[in-house]
Length: 415
Ligand code: ADP
Image 1 (cartoon, protein in one colour):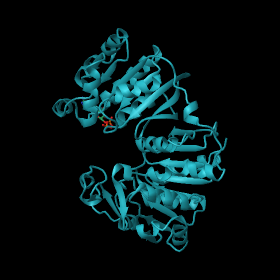
Image 2: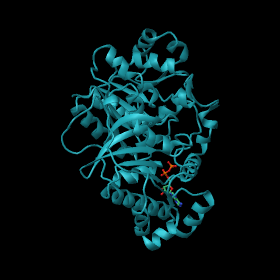
Image 3: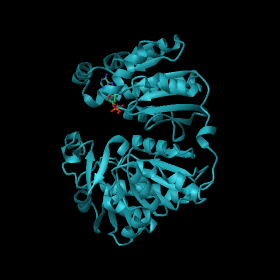
Image 4: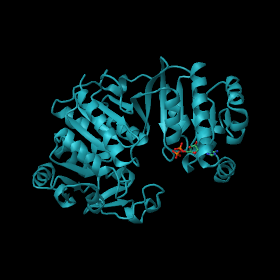
């Protein structure tokens, strides 16, 4: 099968988010971690390549995005999507514009849109200004982000210093007039066009108007209508791939390396009813993971191993080991535990934490995820292969899911 839409995401959880939304349509979606090496094998109609380039130096980000685009083109893609965060995370030296221009050049696109809106998550764009809930981006908590502080809310002003050609705006009043009006406006607009969207209905209009665009850029939400639009014109002819999706059979393990508020609640909820073991970074430095593996071998059911801890405990570990070392010790332990669990028969893994998920997938040697049913918005079950074994992975970034997420995720596979 040939790829219809090839997407490039600037980070891992952004890629899972996009892949999950595309899979809501029932279409087959495959997520590759990094640019695959070697020739294209078994391409899905929707291919998403997860890069890690949000804050990479521009030249590096552009080179990786070009390599990803070349692979996707080989897979058959003639339409491309550049996915970044719905809060437009970037600095004036950021990568969103340069990568978009590089992709325009590589694909021959004359124009591209910029639409990071995600109304379901409170991200809307009006008159080119991005809002987070009811406040402008530049007044939201994003203004203090450690890596990409967003102090301006105007997408044209944010984008202009990042690109070499003109930036335009198509506002909500035009979008509200429908896909034909939007197409006309696009034909008259600049090479880089910010497009307003305040509701899902706007995103449908935009996706319809851009259905045949060579390149679109934005958050994940504007891509969500594309599978059904492709079906309507006969581009996509598939059965319900998520219904055919099968999870690997076998024991389950919950691993949590996230200390986000929602994960704290999820961990205490799950620990109340299941065997659980709290990792201590200092003990890991001293004794390694063997004591944890001995504990795990004696458990039945679906145990949980977690480093999740209250802020004062995290600080105590960081004071002794340094912040990076403390994080690395935990991530390394989660990876080793995952490998040992796999080797003793575990086939279903629920992992909490963006970085932690990256560490576990890397340790398991996973390079490709086949997207299955959605557990919570932005978190699908994924099928993968690890050392020749079929496994199922649910990878959740910090604040995703509700309190009962871990149990819900495992129940979802039983159905
Ligand atoms: P989130 O998605 O919530 O941000 P991540 O996995 O991305 O979660 O990041 C959490 C980071 O905190 C990881 O690097 C992890 O190793 C580290 N960490 C987890 N538990 C502890 C702990 N008890 N002490 C110190 N660092 C920890």
